[in-house]
Structure formats: structure tokens, C-alpha cells
Image (cartoon, rainbow, N blue to C red; front, top):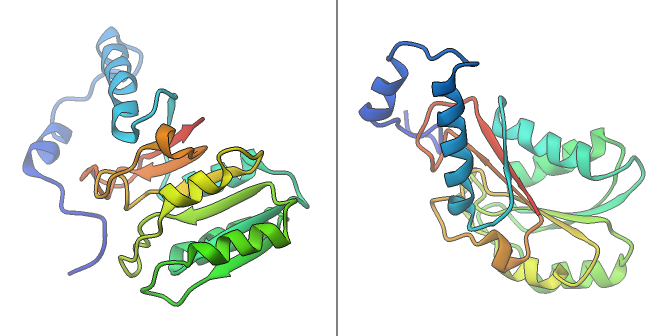
Length: 199
């Protein structure tokens, strides 16, 4: 079946999963976790910590929304496909006022429309966007979006679940505040882990 993910898992990773289980409170596991924590930031090009969740990518999206905003806050969602719409749904469930900048599926969002929406709604608390929209493969220019909000109090939250590793992403240089990823896309691992980088 040809789907945008989960990606095919290389034999090396599959065979690693077949090894004898390591006790979660052992020194060996502690060393593995410390190594992962040292190396993960390099993939996001950040000096920030990365938090690992036992969840799907949607779990990371929900965590970012629920821990960043209060009910009634106004946010801007940049939407050009299924996962942009998912950000809108999650924000709505958490009681946020959602302003949407949309473009047709398969196209990238016009940055000038994002700028215009911010001028019309300078009280937004966050902008949420998908980097590489899994449903179509369309890529949004999160580097420019980050630069638009770099010197503001607006949080820039990026779903990079299918974008990280697959496309260039430099969290710190691009001024991104929260970047989300998951194990089953560019990492080429089985589903079940999500990664949240927070500035």
C-alpha cells in the first residue's frame, strides 16, 4: 500500500526491536536515554531540550496546544491540508478562538496572507502551521513564518512530523518556538513516539 506514512522501517531497526528487552530502570537504559537526549537536538538544529512522548504525532499536536494556550486565547492556524485542519480542530476542542489562513490542498500558503491576518489580529497568542503537509506533500515556508514573528510574543508552533529530516529545518535560526515530530516518518521507526522541541 502506498501511503505517506508510516514509512518503511529498515531491517536494522526492526531487528533492534527483536533484541532482548532492557529494563527501564537499569543503568544501560539510562545510558541509552542520555545518548538520545544528547543527539536529538542536532536533528532539530536547536540547543533546546527535546521531550519524548509515548504518543502519535497527533498527541504532540494536542500537547503543544493544551500546554501553550488558555481557553479563549486567539490563535492563527495556517492550513493547506488535512493536518492543518487537524490543528484547527484541536484548537477548537481546547476552546481557542481560531483565525484561519487557508490555501487549497496541494498548494503552499501565501505568506502575504499570513502577514495580513496578523495585522488584522495583532492580539493572537500563537501561529500554528504544518511544515510538510502529509496529505498532499505541499511545503509551507516555515522559515519565513518564523521570521515574521521572531520579535513578537507570538508562539510559532510547527508540525514537522513529516518535514523533519525530510526537509531542511533549523529551529533556532528560523525562530521557531515549538517543533513537533514523530518516529514514523523521517526517523523511519515504528509509530508510537512523538518529539516536542520547545524554545
